[in-house]
Image: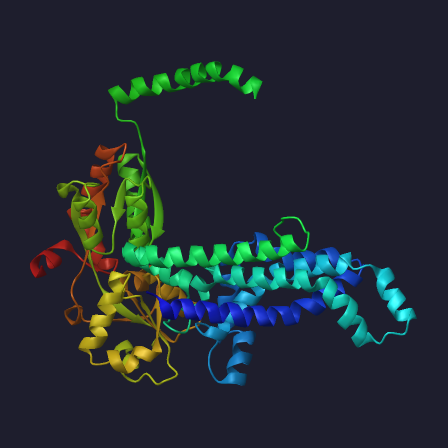
Length: 224
Length: 261
């Protein structure tokens, strides 16, 4: 069994999800309050990974990570190692790749927040921290759960980006989807079946749990 | 919905009417056909060149799909519409014969591959020996790619395998291995000699005696709707004329591989 690959995948999904939540909450909040001319463009950029072939992102990242280019050079100067084919490279790829799955549900949550509620709280001289603690956070908590859950699940399903920037190193970049691809190519269908079944069950269980929570909140079934 | 059902009979009549003359012609003179050829990454460049010759000679069209031998094999097993498969090894064409997807006589050796080191200013073999911890070296994945296992054998024979194993980045096929180097993400890459020639790179050949011969077989897929044209193409690939060109394209011709195996 590919315990190492599965564990690596879980670590990648967890780290990426944590980083995504840190980025996505302020981003979605800012977006929901902003009505500027460029909003549609920013939204489009965030949504790009939904429609773009992952190989496009993988290709650009591979070029960017190269020590021949500014980004790769800066990374190597800062950390002393090249970026491509490392766990860190996969985290960067995953964060970009799953960004819409984190931002969109949060954005929807912030948009649904009644401005009157916040205005009343402000009138009652409730401090900012308390306004977040008692009004904003409870209102967006279900959306945050979906954002985190989808980011995590989507990162587990990542393949095209990792294939291009991973280099298939056991324990470092050989995630479950790549290990499965390897088994199929090596004609090892027994191992492929085992790993595929594990991934299927994990993904199904995760989504079922998410939608079950969502149903409890009285919300309807939808992707975002 | 209603309309499309009504239109269906007339469509069939139209289709039959259009196809009928071509069926008649096909019976009298051989009609130019389009051959779907699946090729392992290492042979993609040479094939593109050779296929042009074949097209001029035969009047047929060759449509090329490039992939790793493993992926292409799996696709053929699951019904991909390829007429001919040029593998990077003998294992997979033989497996197609065993599974009844190809005839024994349709599995032919067409080339013997050679390994080379790309990326060194000086001698590539010295560059491998002098690699430091910071040197990253791309090879094709030994588990998937015949050129990868040959690279592993060569490094083992040079006494470098265990020392360099932490430096290795594995490409899922030989084309990706070269791509890792071309994008500047590794310093050295062990690739196919045919790629060095095809992409005009400065490479150092690795002695073919350092690894098991990379015997490459092609196979005509029995399921093909145009087996005779596919066999003709296979015959072209193993013809003396093509085999003589293969040395210049980075391969050992058949005579050499027959002598060794």
